[in-house]
Image (cartoon, rainbow, N blue to C red; front, side, top):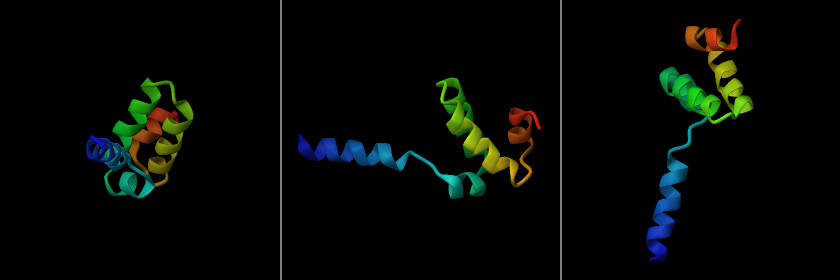
Length: 66
């Protein structure tokens, strides 16, 4: 039972993404930002969109209203 709990925790951590992932795959970043926005985590969404806006991502720029 303990092994299943540890495996579940590892799977949850593996699903999170970071700045390098968003820059490598902007679609993933936009999806992550939209999900954060829908959960009312506006600061987290803004962080992702600002990261993508730095490389000129049109969706991120639109969502930031720049």
